[in-house]
Amino acid sequence: MTLPVHEIFASIQGESSFAGLPCAFLRLSGCNLACSWCDTTYAAERATSYSVDAAVAALVAYGLPLAELTGGEPLLAPELPIVAARLIEAGLTVLVETNGSLDISVLPERAIAVMDVKCPGSGMESHNDYANLDRLRPRDEVKCVLTDRTDYLFALDVARRVWDRNAVSFSPVPGRLDPAELAGWMLADRVRARLNLQLHKLIWPPEMRGV
Image (cartoon, rainbow, N blue to C red):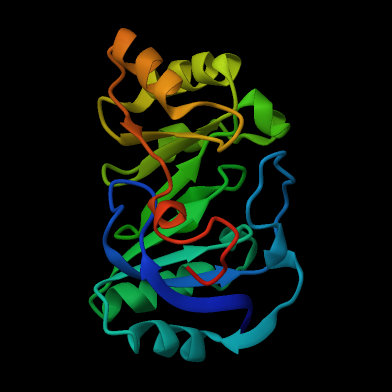
């Protein structure tokens, strides 16, 4: 069993309710979508084969209590749930950042899915697996990336379906939606969601990799 690994690194978690925490990251190569605003297209450039054992050992070696499995789209790798389970057995809290097009029920019960729901501006709205909204466990989270008012209204409808039981984040695309404008909409509508500004891009240059 091998994984197509693009990079393994430690950084500050930039998104979700875990933003700000030191975190070990496993970024897998390959994705089944092509979002208009994708900021990790470079993950398709190369991949190194890692065994499950090697990937788990590399993440545990950072000595951090939090790990994220991301991509690309990590659920394209059949071995991904095994990696998540092994990390949980090692005592780590495990986040799996997924694009929402694949069944999240394959994840171990104690893994935390941070699941995108693609808005119209992504160009990938038709790929949403809306059954995943019913598969969310209590600790799972939903993220919507927004480019404009249309995306916001779409995301608001999605958020209202889940915010009584799951954390929700709205993330404005830099250069396409002003965070202050989004904040105003959220306040006006009494939105029960987090405004997410991708903390790692505020700490380091947005184009920097491995952070």
